[in-house]
Image 1 (cartoon, rainbow, N blue to C red):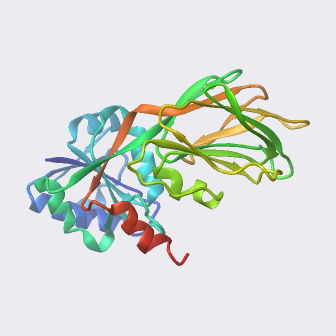
Image 2: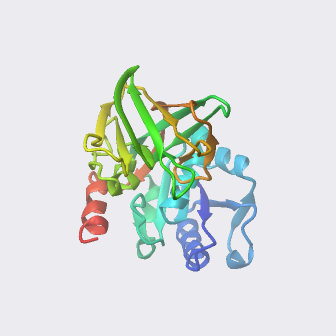
Length: 282
């Protein structure tokens, strides 16, 4: 097996954890690839290769990240077209998507042996039409928000062409079941089983008594349009990436993509174990 190991070196624990992970993987006979921009010093004396991103994604059999949920989301986004199994090792605060903690590196032996299951997670496809036209994908969520702290925007939402909500507020978050435990949860949305194919829509600070979160089936297509007075459009961000600016009247079309992300799992109930261990009591 060839493993593409992606450590988030902005975290102090990342380099020593990555070196320890390399030792476990190599002991099981795996070949380890690291990103070309990773400093080689922490891996001196170890059998590793350093490759550019595209070559690494195409050459590997599995991807392992070391960091937090942001590192997993980054790797998922960059590797969408390659559809390789993705495993996260958590050294962050929450690590909700990670199925291995830093003290559980022995589980990497199970990865090499093939002793794991694949948890297919749905992606959102986000198409923006207007002055700034683009397409992006999101494993967690897409956020359409106001551009400034002292401003509000008017949000209009349709489902398959039928109006379902209109309100003034800070914006709206549209999430996958995977993302229902992230920003959408903070916005008052429900937690969905990650194996459900659906879409969650949560208004952000709606100035309204009649704008509850809503859950839509997998076949639905949501369209969000924004308007306002005296402000310069809105911002669109997928999975927390740098936002794109859109103009008033532009349309953000959100639906479930035919693409998915394959998360490595060692349990039938990883999501609910994470809820029990990492969300309860917070």
